[in-house]
Image (tube, rainbow, N blue to C red; front, top):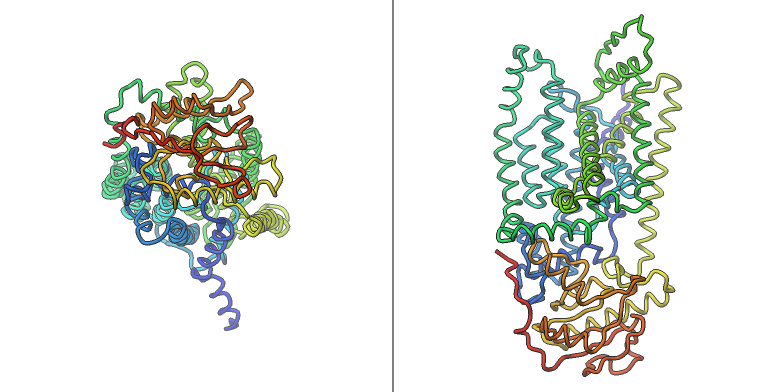
Length: 612
């Protein structure tokens, strides 16, 4: 007779609400750093300008095309209710709740067995929390192209929440809902959504068409009947998905509608090789990323081999059919392949589906690597036009998902090693939990120790400076931006330091160009590259050169600059022969100074048709 207390404890442990709270806490610990994060000044200044055109009026980036129109139109409205930092915190919690909810639902879907049984009644307790920790470990250390999901508030976070829901519905074969959610994801971030849509279509084809017994579908065996059944199952969902893709794709297409072929090509080259090479071009990824990605591949290979030497658990409820291996063929690889196939087919459908997503994402990444190796040196303009679509983004997300799902299958005892299964399970859980606790401890400790937000620290802070100097430079930066916000005209165009990316965030003023804020449309991106090259010049040793009075006059005459924000840390940078507005003395701010061209003519500023 079952013990009521034991049953009650088991019901609580298997509660989806407890798992949801666990997942949210893991996400909060991992990403709960100060505002702004690295990308938030880029996204949220544009969101603020979307609803209030006076914010940063005249800024090239802010007035360029809105590729992520739906995010700005929805989440951006928070800037009308709150200050920008408060709006971001509100958006963060909304996105984290959406991600935690969808991830927990997806984790519960891992235990779906087949089309008739539905999900299991007995789940591994806290599947979403445990799987989420493994997944974050893989993304944090093993990301190859710099992709992340749990972090600041931006459009791809919303997209991934819909993607997780779409994957869960695809696993449960509720295809109309699955494709609709993937369409919503593409509406918020079309590039992210498109790769997942292609992935789900391919995995569905192999699992639900090529790998399904037609007797389960109630149809005859000819492949034409099976194909028609597969098409009919997905047709309505595809229409909804197409509608969502168009919502996300049309703004991106319209902003480049008038760009000439030469401008579009130059824009692609600048995007791939100048601004985003660390995300788009594998040969430009850092050696550290290559090493960690190699380690992740080895872990994935270990689990692939481990599956071949394992067997289905008796609790799977499925009858294991022995593989028909010819006795006269002493072929180890053939035998391993048959054993692997048997073990794979015994896995729940959810784990099979995530496994297929990981393989598809890796195949796409290898195609992108091949394109880079073949074309980048000989025909970079061709490679840039192809690689700018983020061929490696989904691999950074899907591969750790796959590793985590298979690890859970081992750790839960769904598939067991043929020798010493208990020891194998303990080793798996040890390998899962130790890196996870280490990651969460490091992130939590980093959040408590953080004194400078990542969005301010990036580029502004020199890593070789002492901690005391770094904090002083940050205080001076906040002080000068606060003075600018309170004491200067909103309409003046600013020439700002090369080493910063949060000027607009703190001041709401337009700047000539900022390295972080690359526009999305081709015409504005080419102009952005030209402004950077013109305003910030380096010598042969790649050392930033100081501004001279003549250089500033040339920039004023060309672009209509009114204000100059000087970074005194630039080597040999002397005070300018212009009226200095701030600071009143060096003691109040020894890092930055503000100068003004009192005869600046804003009408001289370059006017670009950046929005359709």
